Amino acid sequence: MARMTLDQLDIFLAVAEHLHFTRAAEALYITQPAVSAAIASLETEYGVKLFHRVGRHIEITETGRLLEREARQILDRVTLTERGLRELNNLQRGELKLGSSLTIGNYWLPEKISDFQSQYPAIVINCTLANTEEICIGTANGRFDIALIEGEVKKDLENCLERDIIGSDRLVIIVGRSHPWYERESIELPELMETDWVMRESGSGTQQRFEEALSNWGIDLDRLKVTLVLNTGEMVKAIVENSHSAAGISELMVKKELELGTLRSIRVVDRSGDSPRTLEFIRPFLKIKHNQRFQTRICQVFEQML
Image (cartoon, rainbow, N blue to C red; front, side, top):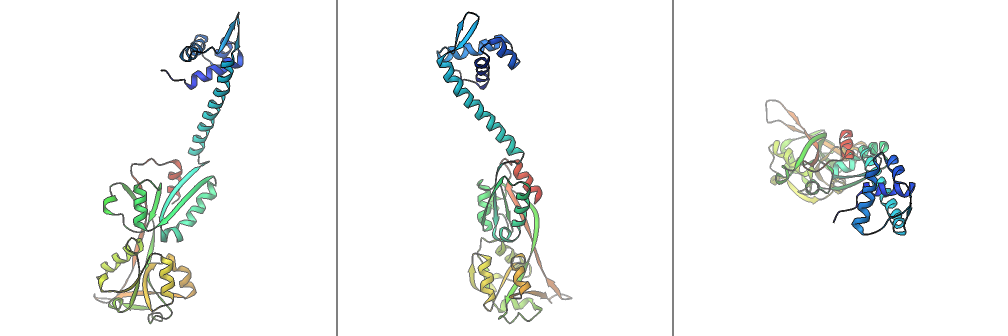
């Protein structure tokens, strides 16, 4: 069974409007036999009569009037759909699904989103915050168009996720006013093992990078006195502010507290070499996306802004 086509409906409506095959053909810039063939095909395929031939004139039948109403609705819907697709490509409408690890999402990304929405206010942005591991899995599964993380991509996801550096952050060691280190400018590397520590959970990008820093400094994590493991940076800050514990955390996350003096960042000095050196750890912010999924124009523009 042949299917009704949009071209057939277009031709039918032209004939219904002009009630004349030749004038309909002229309006559509096609031949009169092509118009006649299209109408005959519809009538034959569905066993109906769309027009009465009365002498040299034609009149639309009741069946034809029914098809006329339906055909106009169908073609109007097609026009709106085409317009929607064009608007989507021109960033006049659409949705962007973002995933972000917690530190980036709370302290770095909001300004980027605001900049984007000021230029493209009709685009809806749905942003989900979770730890790095969850964001990577969501990106691999197609839940997010683009995602931002500060940790490492799991080995089993590396083949499907494309990665680019789009920013950076510095990890700092922080203490509160009641900690004995608070009044000091710096500590020496072995002293890291002499205090209590508050850590993030294992899936956290901050925790991944802090463990990497400790390893680079020759410190075994198992030798640290970890008293608490928390799943948000805000909880880490609140505990450290009011305890004798220390934590390794994003400098972005504690900017306000450092300015107010409720927390202090402590330099770590390594004196094991020929001359003392201050240990620092700069971590990259990564943009990730699936390397085989289609990227809309919205995604491409947001990536450029990042």
